[in-house]
Length: 443
Image 1 (cartoon, one colour):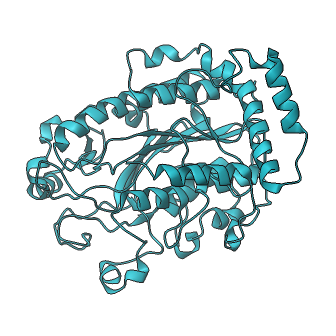
Image 2 (cartoon, rainbow, N blue to C red):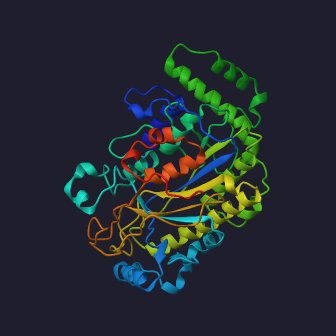
Image 3 (cartoon, helix red, strand yellow):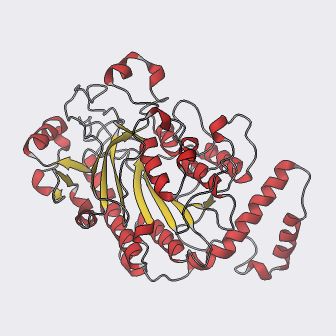
């Protein structure tokens, strides 16, 4: 399930128009400090829409841990022998994610335990005592998707945290935030545009033929856009179109051309693999398009597994694992593995206890993957006690109270990307509530 289409369109137009939003709070004002570092760096967000059940993505393999998992998980428990071992750890991956074990063995995959939307650190007693201490509308797909992407949990947000990072970079011919999965709040900035490109096919304006630049009607259209307009909204819309045309001129040859890493994705026909191949193409062409920083957004849907979860998640992971591995291998082949960091995100995880129909229900804190050449592989954060109604379960079905916030995860990535210490709090407005702002993925 993705955010409401009408809302997305309104947000897209508002963000790309770069119009002033009087309702924004102080931390959404212009971020003046530039990003630090002159080398190329890219973040790649892989959003798993619907609420990925990370309880079966990452499973404890020690005797006590697996026994607790098996007891509470019941009919959804994976056989211990089927898990892909992660050498030197007490955890195993879902068997359809086996391809990722190679990244772990290279020391480049981080397991981040129990991440979720949090206004501040909280205990189970805090959760039970006060609605005000909780993020709005927990367990709601659309709300939690938007909160993960905005890092704003107690009010609607007009911008995403990647968009606020882009505000630090200013405008460019090709915007620094690029989505290959449609419009998303994640990349919407207060003062900068994000860009949505197709997972396949050309990236040109429609209606002017295959070579619009040679079409007289197109030439007249571009002259009209450049003529200026006294109406602020029309002028902003014209500016957006001009930026889009400029980006198309730079990126269309890249997206429709061949790539030296295309063979790594051979045989993968799923949507995520196609999106990540497009990302790899843009990274490969970084010098020709003049990019020094990129944040990419890709997605895979279908994780709302209220029924037949074992089969449905298995099919999704058979896309996810090979696609992520092919993309990592592409960064290695391109010589930019140390410059690209990929991470997963999702609405929430799902209840440890099964629900009727062979599925599970909406929950809260879940586990995520962070990998790349600069990443120090290992386990981060605190794994919950797999006890129904236990100290980490805010209900009685296995809904984990997060012990790491989206802010802490995001700030660690943003710091590596080049956001200064002084600007981290502007990008992540709740970050000051947490004593630990660096999870330690990078050296």
